[in-house]
Amino acid sequence: MLKSPIRVGIVGWGHIAREHAKHLQTAGARVVGIVSRQSDLHLPFAVYSKIEDLLPQVDAITVAVPNHLHASCCLKAVRAGKAVMVEKPVCINADELNELESLLPVAQVPVHVGYRLRFNPSMLKLRTQIKGLHSIKCIYRLGIELLAEDRDTSGDKRLQQ
Image (cartoon, rainbow, N blue to C red; front, top):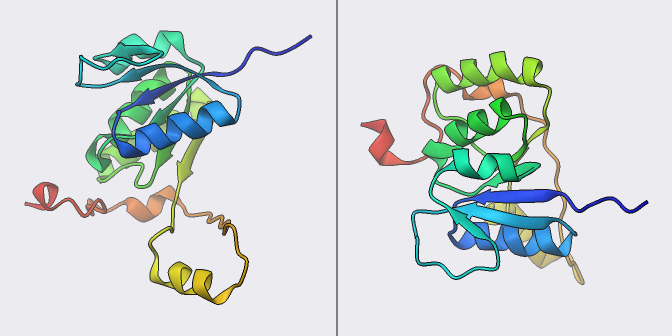
């Protein structure tokens, strides 16, 4: 018996979100909707104004919004029992960290935190040194606790004031 493709929602609709949609569809997932402030989009899937409206329609979400919104989206999805893919940082302050740390063991849903090194100077140098290279795959195991102590790791100066 064939399994139905996983139903995925995308939170955000900027450049990275469109890349996520392309790769999800290539991998066989079915993008069923996005959450966007843009209401005039003409897409082959539903557009929602709130994540709460998207969550009942999907099995998983990918979060593609500014860093300071990552934890909020992740928490809402986990509370709804949905798997999450979010790029780092998953959170930017200790309160978000504490909430995630208390919720994740209870919720028992997969949360994947992506960490891209596409523009890392060492990776750029390595790429030029290896002939015929098509891709570099790096896997890092970082503890969420490294984001603690109220440090803003987003680089967003508006949040650091």
